Image (cartoon, rainbow, N blue to C red; front, top):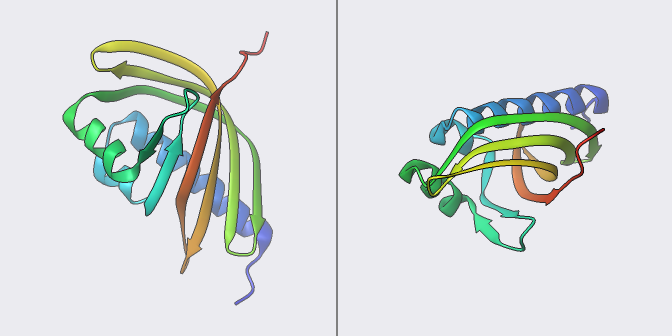
Length: 130
């Protein structure tokens, strides 16, 4: 089945924005809708976290977001694979301590039927624009 790349790129961008909103609102079930069961995240400190562990941290309250303010820099479609690169602020609390990180994030998505699911995310610290 042939897909219109521009249309798919817009759908993927909207998926990323909805996922960011679910994270900001700490909506665990909603977050999970955008993540493949095999999703992992590589953080700037070298840690790797699975979907199950990430959602468990949010459910327990150990990780709570109050802000996910990202600018999408690039959306690229390669067949049934999509890439989203964004930069912005992730803020909230981690084990009761506040955090406010300006970072760059890259997420790889796969198309499952007509739904985009994240399979991998990598985040790294970024310099704030002057």
